[in-house]
Figure 1 (cartoon, one colour):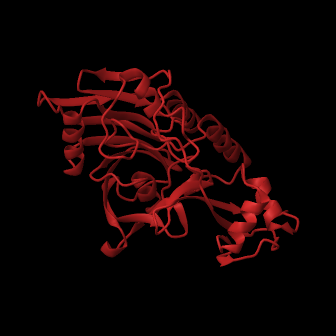
Figure 2 (cartoon, one colour):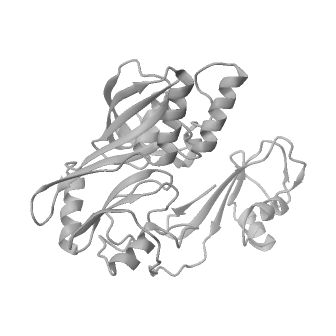
Length: 337
């Protein structure tokens, strides 16, 4: 697993996290990491160890350390400079609406929104550059046209600004939380209260920087508010709608997990484990088949509403559930029938 992070000087690094398999044989860690990392020479790995940039179970180690089963390994490697130009790519887009000022796109699951670590092509931004040409951006973040984003494996609606005025106007609506966003999520278990509000503070999870975590204390993060309502109960899972008042990274995924209801099939947040239901082999096989049908988190950005930057009209858009999501729901309904 990996992500981009900055050190105190603003230099870009790649952060890798691995856990050694239970059956892992003892092996020098520099050799072991060479098998795990692409384009990482043994010299580069050894230099990282000498600099204290390789930790095993939370402690810096040397390059001759012998890896053992279950070892938790974290490594920082300098990332080589990248060409930051956005290259247009002829990638089909599901455009729900478009005018001279903005467009609404229904993003499929599996598509990265903007270029980043190990995803420098094939993104929504590359497709937009081909479709719409040069788009404005809020700063030098190489995310032209974007004022918000959704995760790679979340499907659904995004609004894109096609000029500076539209982009700024939309950004202002997001800042003041006046954008209407409704998501559909299949989560494990049933809520005690069929509807409610999850309010707290959100920041990176100290135990895993890829994840976000819900905190109770203000000093631990930024305010995060999600309103939820149960639409359908399945005894071991629930279909819920989530309305975002704020838009933190992984907000719904982290909030659902904090309530003991991780999103179905969300591997990062524990949703690909059977959290509730029968202990019978038949039920386990049923769930495994559902995971195969939808090997990503069951989360869909279904509705998006805002004020048009130029006309001042209220705009409202919907996107139906994609086939993988709707198929899993139908499979569950048939199973319980």
